[in-house]
Image (cartoon, rainbow over all chains, first blue to last red; front, side, top):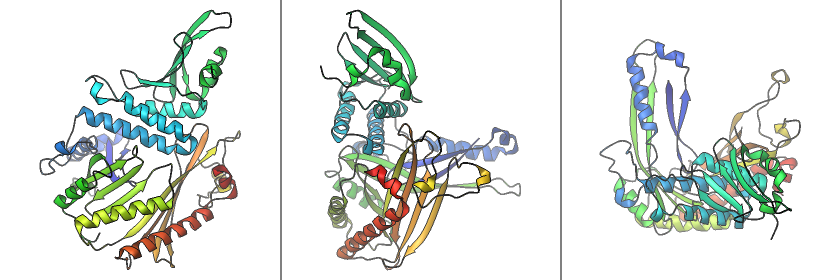
Length: 214
Length: 229
């Protein structure tokens, strides 16, 4: 059972605060009250929209217009990601930040977008930011996007590389191909928390991917 | 503003700002009221349509303008470029606003600075809030360590006839790994004898900013300042 309050927060985003009541209350509430909460719940998902001028909703037709425009979804995802970058701007190098913005725009090129593609997911991007603050790499990765909206970061060359896939909940999936000093190639993969990524990769001399110049 | 700007005028404003803030989001404001009585009667609900809000951004969403029926807001997210640039931007955008709407009586002028202070987690896992902040929640030792808090102080600044609201709170999950974060949110506003002339508005904002600086410095300790260096 959910209760909803709406407030305008800060300078920009419209926020719907959701308060969760114990499910045991459900039996204590009348059908009318439950209907009220269902109506509120149906409004929560449509509170924010992003449209071009040509698609501006007619406020007379509905209280909260529902939009499924893919362009809007991509725009919102990029906007949220950039907002998250600003939240840690003091921990990031300015040139790093600008490069990240440019790459975010590039990997979300709407002209090459497939209908089934997903833009960067907020939780994935947050894991990426946290990981980058931990790693503080001197070398910038190549960024990409998985089919389901997970950000990917790749360091290295074709034969000697590490790929990090940033999942939600501070979880990072890594795959690597490492050329050992004896020229043997080791391949490995794993999953772990972002805070521990360096120790998880430590057997493979991660510094040569993240920091050393070739 | 004292009076609403109608939707047609708001949409004209939105188009006018398009060249300065190319990226647009159209939001919808609504107010939901639910009254649940304890006397067994069914709850009553009302949904009030607050109209459209136009949010426009520039420079990778770092510069923002918010156009609402009753207010005009400009803001900047980190990294900040300094007061002079913000004031220049305000003067430009306020001029653009007035060129479209004409003179509208103002009911409030204000500014808000939302700061987040990131403190490296110590080995003990405990951060004494008063080591960093002078506004915090104090509780008896018998309760043990504070896991989170949120406090608000409201005061009056007589030299600029303005109200100040300071919010201090823990951030539930810091986005910065290995850190605990606190918010120090300073909001200064004047809704009494609000200046209507542009030069007086700018004067007031400049004075508010000086007050904000003074108050911010008084709300943090030297240990917090070390984090900013």
